[in-house]
Image 1 (cartoon, rainbow, N blue to C red):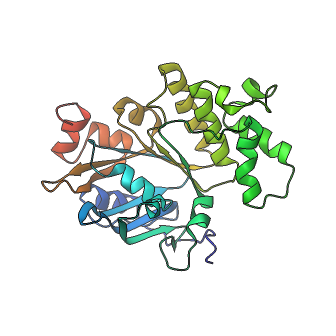
Image 2: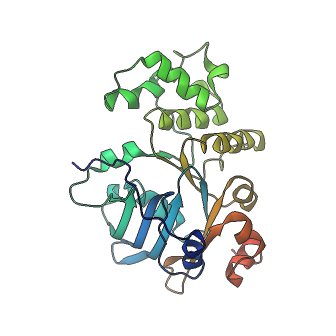
Length: 284
């Protein structure tokens, strides 16, 4: 099995990287790119869901993926940890490099990929176990041999949840509020020390106060993790992300990457009129 360890990458001009993205050209490569896609295409049976996505995800940054419903942003997100493998009709073509290694290479175990690329879903989904066991479970199956109590505390502290649950670690996680459950799911993801954390609409089921806690947490976690978030909330994308990728659909309902670059630039000086129209609410 291929070991997905970090490898140095060739240094390129950052401006060239984003010039390529903005114009729909191939993604550039930089030493700070942790994940790179080349000509990514996704099919569900005969339906061409996503075409020719070239994208570079920056290490220890937050990248938001935005766009109208059905544009393929969640499909692309699920490619990053091979979740689409679980859909019988799905087929992925192209290349996705994690630390310069193709995660779709035949010798790579998808389970190993998910060890390096964690996932937090739209709806909080804690296991029907204790708070403690929710954190410990993933570490155990990945062969963790350290002090489990310390790992549980560290993970819950990293998710800004420790002070709220430290006296009820052996109570059911299902008794937590929705926002607490989502932070528990984030703690569960980071307990296995991934390189990347994927978040698919992580705040859509939460109230505004819980949403702000998750957003604050994302900014804190970016110091140690790379985060990719799918969101329909333009304000959220503008608040939390460093880079934003805007997806659109063509006349055949196939999604494609329209524009990608630093969030401030994309929101204030977008290259494409479709991007400006979507951000300002004129369509979508």
